Image (cartoon, rainbow, N blue to C red; front, side, top):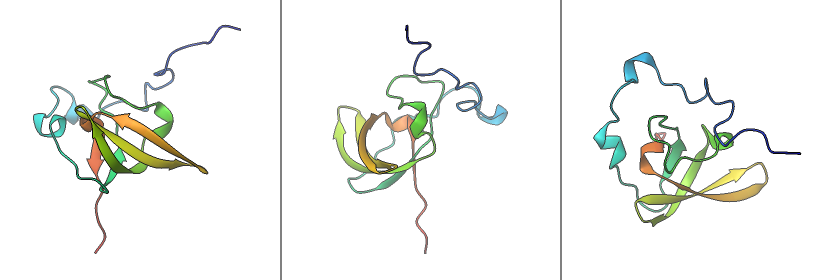
Length: 99
């Protein structure tokens, strides 16, 4: 049977932006830097499709393990499996540390 759809199938509401955040991408988010071992949240920027992860990982937190070109390698736990993703920094947010 032929495979139906693409990687962004059924993501209309999942990747939708708030009305206040629509428009140009922030250059600060586009060029942000991270250090190895830093915790990050995967939050997609729908205006830029390059370097985006698969929709299953949306909202998960991971750890930076390295850099590959302009993108970052992220290690995260998906149920019992440890997975490695390569994601553009525009799709990442720094996690808040609890004090």
